[in-house]
Image (cartoon, rainbow, N blue to C red; front, side, top):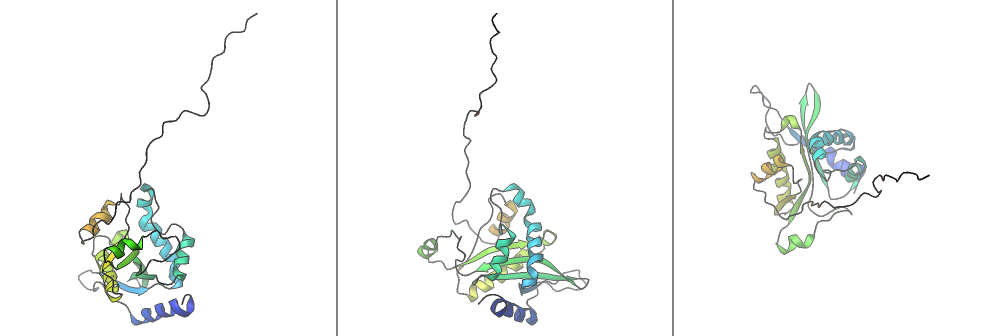
Length: 213
């Protein structure tokens, strides 16, 4: 089910249940982070959050990091089989989004290029991490690890054997983060380019002979 009757009912129930806490807030200056499922009213805030997180890497990469358009992001909410999680803190009584994760235990979406046979041949049951974003202010504080722990927990509950995600080739910080957490490269999918030697389509200026009398 999608829309208000199914997806949002489940999300509202999760929200009322309170969610999980990452770190206890207290006198030591630590911050408490809670998890809940995304509600429709969160979508605009999450979109602005994702633009902030991926702004710098999108300026330097050939392929925009997901989601590519706001329209596509809004459509994802209506799709079956995709779990959207938001990680939040409370600051001065207001909720602040500090991380977002989007995942699925099956290949979803009509524009997906994932080869299912690759995983079947290797007896892998993948749990696809479609999106993982951490606010720049919270990077290096254990939040990314907490997000991965939540995703691994969902993978186990769904009988999956591997977390599978895509990361930009030039996002070196993300590569370091994942490699230190036992991720390995599955395939060599990179963009390649070769300069093409061409002549200008218009001929260069030409000097004409002097007029004869």
